[in-house]
Length: 291
Ligand code: PXG
Image (tube, rainbow, N blue to C red; front, top):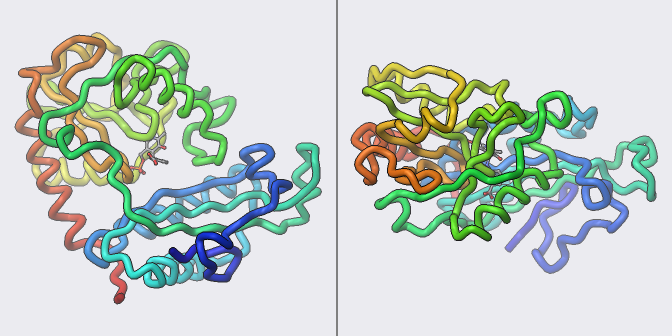
């Protein structure tokens, strides 16, 4: 496997970064997770835009233009000859010294791009639906580390994932500090009630997910009314259907939350229709490459 490391494609065994990199010392950096389907990189522009927004917010000046970043991503996928890929782009503050001061890193950002295959959850869950549980760890406050920043410090999400796994679940439902539904550890949440879609607004400790935006576009196309609205757990429990969205997870039906059955306890009609449309879009939309 070839990894892009600061402009060079190197073997996986040689893809090493310094222990003084502030990405490693402090989680000081940003990342994106992107997918390609059948030689089409899905929503590449949106992912690159969000990467640069995250970097801007934490004052990292990425030393590549967006076009150069796009070329670097495509080059890495092609080097690995992947028709379908999961691409991780990482930009860290770079090598510095001990101590938080980012000025010590002298602008030598480390850029790593990995292209590989992943399947986040077992196939069975996509067909039969997932059971999730509310976890004790509260989603980061917007005023502290804003969840819009896809930073290398994912401990908030990792803790929630550990709690979900420890209670025998694949995913954990994270609430914001007021107790409203925020998102799962790496996915946004949708519920369906009386034929309409609801998802928490991005100010509720929720990442503005690119798959979430895609589902909102699909709902317009399918003429399913959709609302960005605060959700309580009660509203989640009494919904007719629910599903999670994310680049890595794609669309996963949720059929049980905190021991309560959602709707019939099977993936719902609207969920299945949206999953179908999502699969169609990923096969036809995207930035094309040749291998
Ligand atoms: N919420 C959070 C907290 C995320 O990290 C999403 C929602 C979904 O966003 P997109 O744009 O992908 O639709 C994410 C992103 C993984 C993994 O390996 C998943 C994500 C990020 C990093 C790692 O499971 N999902």
